[in-house]
Length: 227
Image 1 (cartoon, rainbow, N blue to C red):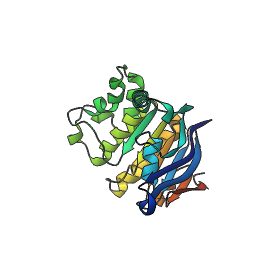
Image 2: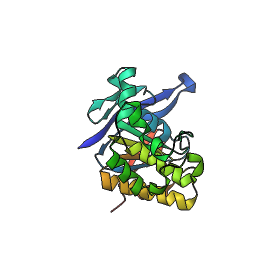
Image 3: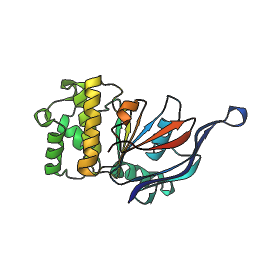
């Protein structure tokens, strides 16, 4: 089953001679549980694509369906709730709340919707992420790699239809970068979690099930990589 359908997405800035096509007729689909990597240079359009697929920005034209829902047919209020409940985000800046401990940061998206966390699942995430002994630590007491693990858990805790990872290793050293990519790979396999990751690092993209290349607003499917 396709969890994500993107059809003829365009994003145009400016007009006339100043017109820039950040996205040019981008179409693709992603099956449930796939780990997808999109590689490209800075300015290629990959961040624009992630922001639109993640409903953080509007396209000039085109359609996005997530879990069968026509994303841009929703009102702004409904879209805000849908984004919070169905899309998880992992950014290169960890965006943790300094006053909350690891477990509180991880469960924060559920509390925004007044939902009681599934403690068994929270405990499992903390264990899989190697954070069980850090559950009561504040972000300031964690390494960069540990903070990014919390961010991954926060994205997973709602069991979203789709996780968007925007250069998730951008602020990490090579060792922690490898560990984070391996974690994303295992989360996709363990929980059948669909992940869309953008990166400029082609070696990291090799961990994905399928790789796309973005250049000048055009998306090319490079096919499967991981066996």
